[in-house]
Length: 136
Ligand code: TYD
Image 1 (cartoon, helix red, strand yellow):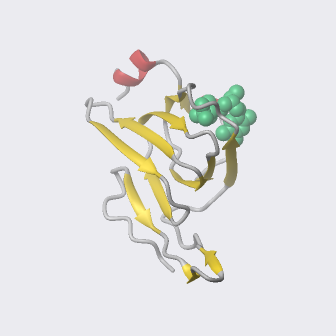
Image 2 (cartoon, rainbow, N blue to C red):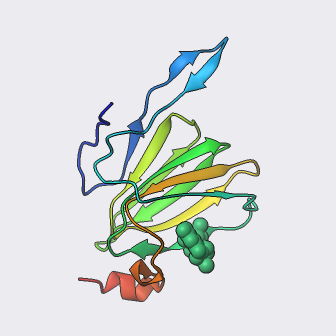
């Protein structure tokens, strides 16, 4: 099913729906994303007191799930607009366009699953906040 991304340039929560029932369990499916998935990675056992992220991507687009636990995100664009999101349900994805500085904090049992538009390329990262704010 084609997912409903309202504005391709804005981070947003996306409902992936659930197939199943409370008695049997559920399946959620990601297909027909607005980008081709070239990489899938998952992040886990991140201590709650650690803040991860601290970077932006020049081109990479992502849809991120908390398939277990909950993950708090703070996103910021180059103009300084900040948005907070909480992922706490496996059927909800967070779409992150390119050029958003992100930090995230995991609950102790959280597993982050990311569907990404490209392979891992360190040169796609902007890891210095001041460089990000000057990015054109
Ligand atoms: P990073 O993306 O900075 O993690 P986070 O945003 O969760 O803080 O990646 C952490 C390290 O893992 C970094 O050294 C790069 C490496 N890494 C890979 O080798 N391949 C990958 O696909 C990813 C996402 C990270």
